[in-house]
Image (cartoon, rainbow, N blue to C red; front, side, top):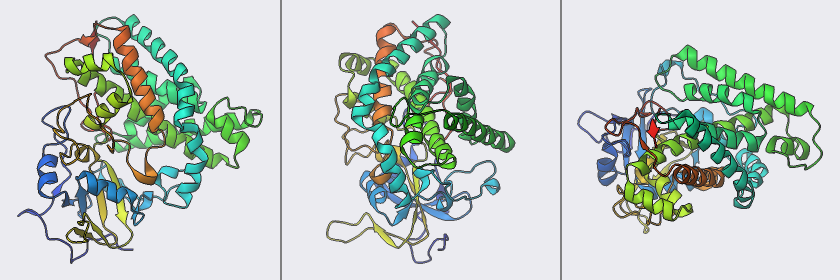
Length: 420
């Protein structure tokens, strides 16, 4: 299958040819400004990929959801080219997903692993774990207080809270958490030295192998349910390679994304007193979803490779639309789709009274984030605990913008010094 652009697709949309993925932000809470214009003019438009190939950027909400539900678009790791350059792009080598690396597979392999793991992340199971999340959040709030005014909310609260929750759910020893967090952060940075990124990847693999090897050596009565790894070992026919891959996928997803959303959401609420008041009055799932919609932290969204020719964005009668040729890469701007005025009136305004159903911050379709219920519950409890335990919480230096994670795969704040 060719990965080169077809010669009979739409011509370049600008005089100088397609632009690369936008990265600059004028507001710390808004996606790059180009998305607003592109979504209005061309919700499906040509972009220039780091390899020099052309791909398609999809910024409309309906079009993004169409791609995410169409099996003719593949999510396989070896078919997906990064839409922004790693350092350098020549170092990037496509690799097939390993056994157990379910998030970068297509059906039927993806379906098999998804069915195996879904029961650990149901809303009912997460609700049973909510009490423990609240205990962890309370402990982390006390740790933040012990650091004193001027403490970094990210390092002192958001990162350890997210890390402890996913590690405890999986059954990962807490002493492994800090090292894993540091190395995971390095692998998501576009400006990190290639050798450092490689060393971090190796250390992550070594840590996960250590964890899985130790758990396999333990005795686990069938279905004892003590943690997810123990349960998988006792109930499922999975080997060490699969366990390592599954553990890696869930750790990386659960630690990095939730931690960044906790920090960025706290900053957004601190800078929106009226919305903070609403959250204090009603810290529910709907309020969390509006924050997820408005602050979608996936900077460059999701990517898919067309396995066949597909007409995207056609009218109900079949007219119009853009032909995507077999082999072309499609990049989904989830943060732009979540600001689509066709779905959300005044989309650039944070409104915790808004029904934000249908947002794509967790993706959509068969690859909808498996940990969405856990993430929502951790965010809700995390923010609620933070603002109830520290009712006078404020930025330590409100006249200065914190350093934003513009160079990272997942957006957020690097540090957020706070006082109370």
